[in-house]
Amino acid sequence: MSLFKRLFNAVRSGSVTNEQWDDIRSNLISADLGVKLVDQVIAEAKMAKPEDAKQSITDVIQQWLSSKDRTISKNSDRVSTILVVGVNGTGKTTSTAKLANLIKNERKSVLLAAADTFRAAAVDQLQTWANRIDIEVVSGAANGDPAAVAFSAITKAKSENYDYLLVDTAGRLHTKENLMQELGKIIRVIEKQSPVDEILLVLDATTGQNGINQAKVFIEAAGVTGFILTKLDGSAKGGVGLAIEKEFGLPIKFIGTGEQISDLAPFDPEQYIASLFD
Image 1 (cartoon, rainbow, N blue to C red):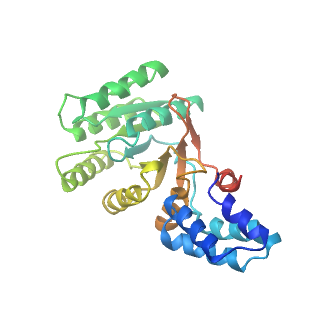
Image 2 (image 1 turned 60 degrees about the horizontal axis):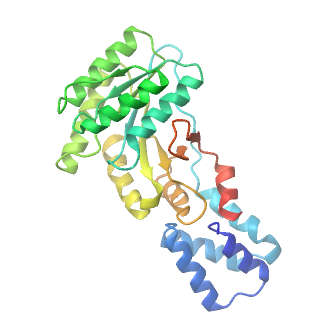
Image 3 (image 1 turned 90 degrees about the horizontal axis):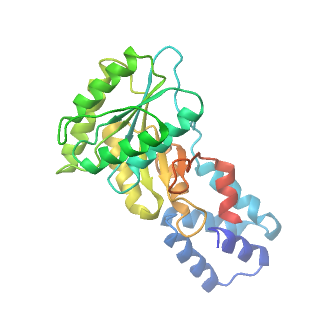
């Protein structure tokens, strides 16, 4: 059942017992909406007239969504550089390839940089995807310097007038501090030649509150501009999308919808809200 369907149906019935409210509250919390937001939406539902319930709840959750631009940056006079960051296992490398495919389908030229040099599988995975969609990848030696890959990639992207450079970054080093230092180094190396326009954080929606904790670390260290949310739907764990945008004020820009290269779509707030009820 969709996230708010049970709440909506209960309010619309005109009679909800305390036990039913407690049960609805538990279900919403388990859907990764977060205790604070759950209590807010239930308070609004309790005040709403049965016939106004859906609109009242919708009005509240619309206020939680980010008002920032959900499109990716595009510059007509230089390469647009996008870093894709996140912990391993969230779908970071696959999302990088999917985004490259989406950009290419808009008739823009795109270059990929395999800067997750500490995980050989990531470089191979990105190259495999790139071969399928005929996009070139800049890579380096295994366990080499990710910033060196980024330097080579931005140099090539500028000299060959690419529209976009997408950089897949490392998702795990020995410590959190090392990871963030490495990301900082990549950003500095690129920005000596051209601005970094977007830093997109990939989060797995099914990790719930753990994903929010991951976001805090990356936002503090890397200047995240938006999110790519994988495995998002309006049912069991759908609340995390609301929780993330309410917490950080940053927009979900894309959602991963499946395993295929074409399974990445711009995030549609209205469609997402509708899915939480229907």
